[in-house]
Image (cartoon, rainbow, N blue to C red; front, side, top):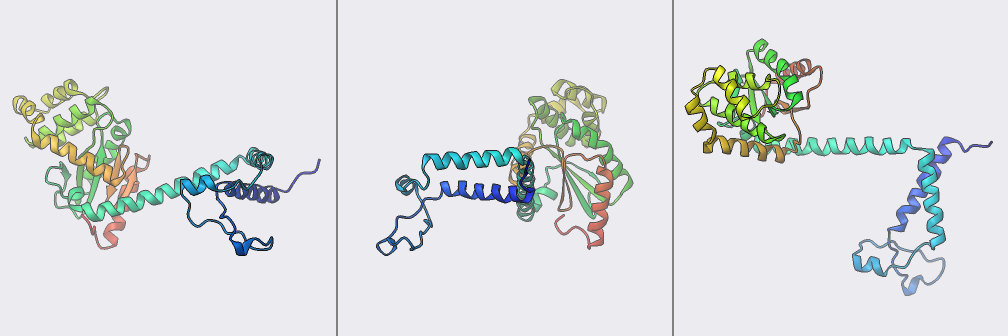
Length: 286
């Protein structure tokens, strides 16, 4: 059986795709000077629904079916094209997200790194700031906490800014309110540690129980949970995350370097970024 070389099939497929693209490109009606068969046909530079509706069909129904068959055969013979397209799309989306993030960092550095309402752990005057967006019911956030705690313990120059981003459930916001209320009593880190390592669902009941074990004033805590300051902090973080294009937790910033998710080598990756930031002269945005 004779087979077409792979490169030939790819070229044929690309040609078919190009023809398919032509189906949606209306062709401008020829002018008086272009009635001659040798005159060039110009593609419309801009189209509207009205002009597109008036544009004549370029191919007959039979030709369209033939082109569709070529495209179908090509894609079936070369399914890896879909992976190539997906890979290209992911790369493009990562580039767009990186640009969006850098723009947000430039315009909202004060809110990201120095917001007075955000809880802080580690060294408040550290030379490199690590920011974490998290949800108490996020399994990956729970897994990442061990590395975060180790980083703060081993590097006395790191400032950790914690952004409560309760997006998974009603219980997530209830837990966030408990933790933020504990901040008013200087007990945020203790309650945060208890909640992020909590087994099972984090909600108001389980979070209050954890806070009580941490030794907070429960009457004051319950009042502060409903305070405007707590409500505004949660709203600010949600708005900030949206402007930065953050759609899931955890999400980390090491200075202006992003780490999405909780990779297995998170501690190593963060330590590497911190060392590079210091080598480059320190954090320029923190």
